[in-house]
Length: 243
Image (cartoon, rainbow, N blue to C red):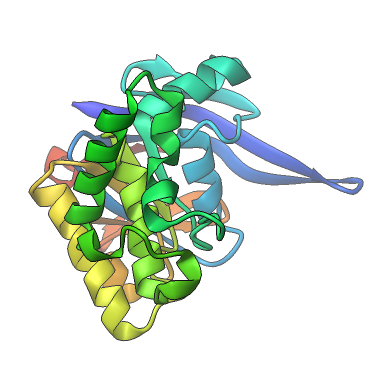
């Protein structure tokens, strides 16, 4: 079943007096339980795709549906509520608040829910346990390594039990050992916790960790693991593409 349905999406930006086209009629599905890596040169539309799926940006025209909800038609307040329940987003720069502990950073999304303090603390501890940081609850970001900061960011993304996890360059600032730890965590989230994952990456190892690799260039899908974009991709890949 398709969790993400993108239909005939056009997206353009104004840059001074110039119009920059990112997508010109993109149609693609991402199946529930899939783990997809988006690769391609800078400016190819990878991060824009994540932003459209998360409702952080809107298409110029076309439709973006996630878990049955028409994201591209929601108001700002509707999006905030929907995103809190549906999307876990991990940014390349971690975006942790330096004045808050790991526990407090992870708890932040739960402050938008009706959970009481005890339930929030329990959910937060579970999320930090999943990422292997149960012993770092009271540490501030400055007291953590880059890999630990990224795992805190992932814990924050999963604490509300989202349907879809989106990650922008999750290993971009990490050393080899930390990258391996983060990639193993993502594999577990997909295989053991059945989370649907989409990552943007330039890292070949990160892409190999995914079940499906999509290559974008200037908003056009070129290939997936040797399959030409003009052809269909089978359901077993977790992704369907139409051009």
